[in-house]
Length: 229
Image: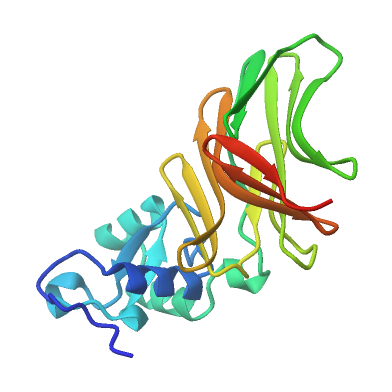
């Protein structure tokens, strides 16, 4: 397969190449694993003016700036590119989500769930299967903690948010955290979860497929559908 761009003078990296780079780099900065990153041409865009997946890596804003300014040697980036941080453990580095406050709101399938902190660890659980909370907020003394669990058809956990810390498996076909939006795909055009994190106190599940113990719940912008039981 030809991974070069049809327009070699364009700085826009073709989407299939972006996905290939994300997968190879473990969906995070190859140095530290942070899931918010920039695409970096290892040989320098000004030198090559081409997009080849093997010549592109992922760096977070901090490490990208350090490389550009000369504080991070290109040789060190090349080494990390061959052994990306996240692939060493098959899960991403934890990433803190900055939820806070004494009230929260969850929008899922056109349904809105809200609650106020009533003290003693108030909780709201919009979605639960077999007594396992898949989406939940905990409110305690001004702290707002998001918890979310996502499983595949084999009951293997591929996404976990535990008290505002985001973790994900590097096994899915594609994962992209862009701005406030997290999308995980099982295959091309096949979205497993599409979430928007609206700080400081709201989460919107735009689309999703929640699986656990043979139960499947489909989420669409205007409805929830339980496909089996």
